[in-house]
Amino acid sequence: MKNIIKDLKTFIILWSTQSLSQLGSAMTSFALTLWIYEKTGSALQTALLSICSYAPYVLMSIFAGALSDKWDKKKVMLVCDTFAAFCTIMVLVLLKTDLLKPVHIYVLNIINGLMNTIQQPASDVAMTMITPKKYYQKTSGMRSFSNSLITILNPVFATALFAFGGMESVICVDLLTFVIAFGALLFWVKLPAISDEETESGISLLDSVKSGLKYLREHDLILVLILFLAGVNFVASAFDAVLPAFILPKENGGEKILGIVTSCAGIAMLTGSFLVTMLPKPRNRIRVIYLTMLFSLGTENYLLAFGRTPTLWCIGQIIGWLPVPFMSANLDVILRETIPAGMQGRVYSCRNTLQFFTIPVGTFLGGFMVDKICEPVMASDLADGLLHTLFGSGKGSGAAMMMFLLGVVGTVICLAFGGVLRKYNYTD
Image (cartoon, rainbow, N blue to C red):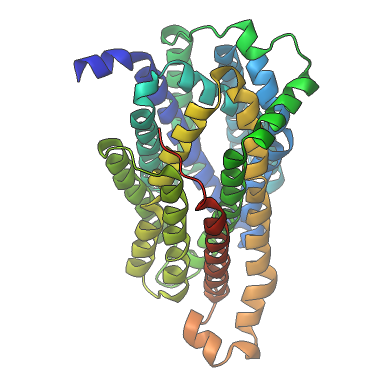
């Protein structure tokens, strides 16, 4: 154990402090979701928060990775963190002066999303640079563990702080976590150098982007996995847009229940992350990836769609999110072992564009379908009888109907790609 801690000392410092900062940011995002839904009562306007964050991520990510491969990773992370903190301060200033409107949050989320676009590939490569290869699966499990813990804690802490001191208290905690993470990265984290040959520092930005796309074309396994997970992300992002509209308006729902249900996803991921860290590597990582997603998408949406009680919603979240760390850790190992460190920034960014472009699309369609189609249908005479029996009545029943549709789409995506992925067998 002492040797592991010694070997991973730098990783532990970076991972723990960055995770703390991510917790602060997630709390602010959750509190802003509550604030906007309180102001508008619209699933679509609430979903625009995520759309504004992800749109620049998708549009610019393919170039951001190429720039990240050329630039100093530590400086990129410090600058991007500073811009993100500035956006949070602007929200606080507008809130204190009673000028804050949804449009301000959308604009600041766009800026924040752009900074995250540049920072993410730098952060991913930095983690690879400071992690010995033999610890890839263990550190992937640790990162999944922290992400799970954030998912558990952020709605609980955000809801408590929001109720106690309003948005101001949530933002102040967010800024405190930023200061801790910034100081740790600046003073205690030293990244090893990557040679000019590995980074291809002499080539142009456009050629660097092309080299990332070329790598994906030449490695069809990675490309198929990316496209499969793009489909998974479409369903998952639509689910995230629908969930507040499903729980908040119900008599047995509300802010507290939304926080509890969201935390159950984190508890499930925490458990899964622990198992990933402790279990030996699987025989076939590809099979683990698509079978876990089939189980996840083929159960959670249906349980929430037909469930009437918070207990069933929590069970659905736990069943749906427990397999996610297994998928994430095995995908992470495949990418880190397959892609050279000097190319990871540009390849990851091409991956991000292809894999995550479905997130703003899914988020928009999830909110749009609830507001404009599903809720009106469930409020009309057409819903009398079978639809009311299946999905209930009143506001929120349209969101339940949308959950069912997402379950069908998710199952079809997993079965279709499963047939393609079965021909691959990745072992290491």
